[in-house]
Length: 253
Length: 253
Image (tube, rainbow over all chains, first blue to last red; front, side, top):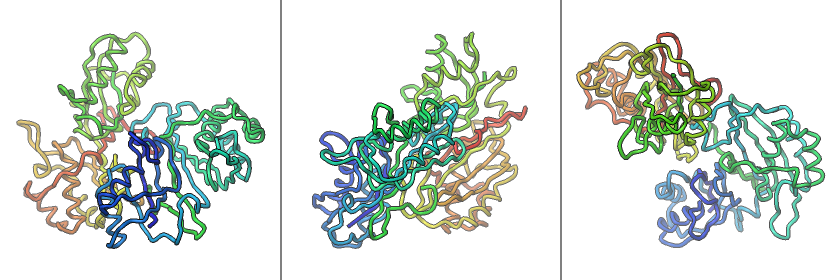
């Protein structure tokens, strides 16, 4: 079975199971075990960090379940806490693996750019009170697109290289909210938050677009970051070779 | 001094001070006392219930403060928790009282109308999975406008009557979100949540628009409600005779 999961990560220590810490995986496995009366291991497309949210996380599991998949989804949603929901459930292709089969991931990072902070957007955005040079941030973001070594912006898993391909990276403004959308084949550890932190330096005027390009070129980690807070980050969608994607429907969900 | 305050009410037992329970008033008074080194009592335009949010609550207080009002606002925001922010601070007119002087209040109630719940909007909306007859809900809402006795939808403060004037009541749809906006001279206890609960019965098809009109006409409380959850409700703005209003600026804040 493959399923699309949405969650508010504020109160969780990330997706992946940990001893003595609340995680999204533990909640999903607990709900599945209560529903099916069997321990069931789930695998996810991305191990989001503590505090990171998701609208389109993808998971796979092999449940002991005699009823329909609609019932499985409703049953899980009835047992899961308000912070986690199964948005969609379907039959997985044979030998499906949500992480190894994924060809693209899309993340969004939200910034609340206003003089005074707003408690009603705090949970899902970073507050920046200084004025930002958005045109320069857009120009720098365009330099990210392409296949290259992103070592300046994050660490690869042990033994792996840090070459990734970014397909799209752009800023969008709506009133006081500014959001950064980025799509790549895969991401290094903390990569999106490091990139946003570095783009903010361009926005503050403490780094030029050319200097941003140099960091990218020289892979110099001292020029990059710091990583921004987890709460502005949302895993939006994961894409697969069969053109199936864990995209949210219409509307601001 | 009069100030505009925004808050996420989820973790608070309402606005008004209570013994042994966290309230917005207590947090504001604590921040003021730490800042000015004197206990300072604040008065608010509306005593929002437990779990209710605000973008445009109005408060007044008389601080012992030698510095500018901008410094007062920055100082309070530095001391207040993330859930509460002072959006604006200004000199109050002489003898200003935020509740008695207010001429209009505006609230908004948000409904997430979709088959599956969404954890990222849970905190600020009620999830309704059934399809809603929005045209009928709009028709019923229009019947609310005018000056009349709203006893069916709430209780007046002791010894007072339950006649109120509603200036506007309308639904707005944006994707999966449906929001109800209502403006009146004043509201009875739980009135907005009772009205929304009754309008939802019209939306479900279990009450006709004519029956909604009858409840309004006969002031029969058995036909109304039930009150919907507090978390969808936001105090948007309070208006005063000098045309000053605690309105939020542009953008989705």
